[in-house]
Length: 370
Image (cartoon, rainbow, N blue to C red; front, side, top):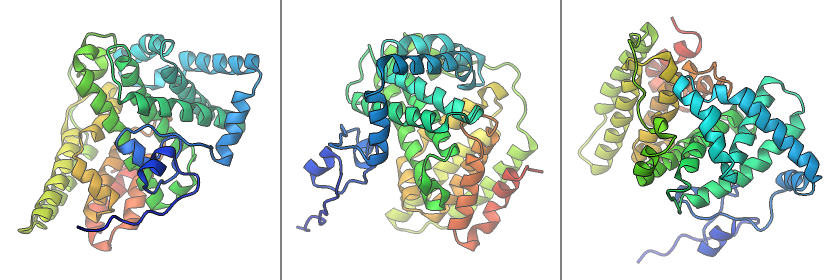
């Protein structure tokens, strides 16, 4: 029987990893080990930077803290909710229904405060340190509660969990866009954060699968069903060109398969991801649905494809570049900005030059298209 992989203690690791005797990556508020399998994740002592943010709010004058929260909630209800979707039906939910759930579920309210703080940071840039501390504090509190509740989805909390599962994705992209993470200035760091967001989206799928009937009967039901469209436009020339390039990439990857099971699983997961991307590039959807379709696409990615991405399989990275193009199509949304372009650039710097022909179209797209 093979011996267990050596365990090296890490100072400051979470309680769960210490008990399981596995190496903790120290990610806050929830480490990757706990996030992947929805385990409770707690730390005995926060890192220095977060201690500052916690101290600022835990010991802040209650009146000043309350005023800060009211200001952010006002910003959300006046401005931020309008940016949560391009679809009028969903915008109405973010304006009325989601805040109602937030007032009954503190973690969702904290999530709205985070997205409002980061939206204000993007739009105004004032009080940078103060707003960053606010965003970090509420992000830590809300995400930790959300991860724990994924193990206890009920009829009463499923609607708030569904809303938060979408809020946290927007928050995560905007934190990338605002430069919250130093490591994302390097290609590997950026790719890791993108994969983390894909993992978060899988949480949204788990909520929908477990609570589908409850959600269908609730006021957030439009979030889980396609919105009927009237006379959607034809795919643009740029989208059609990307589809053609993806088809060529598909043929190239299909030619790499050999007789081994490992090769078959790898190629099938890559082709599945390409097929999913093709469905978006070729689909006739209205501008109002563009944001939701693009952001929600990774929910349906094969888990084996995500494994390839985490291993930095070069073919999987090239496929990711085409998702970067889709993200670039929504760069007008404040929380995304140049993230799509950065993904394409990161992939281009990480893969062998043999893949260059398959990256020409993504590079054209992020430079303005033709």
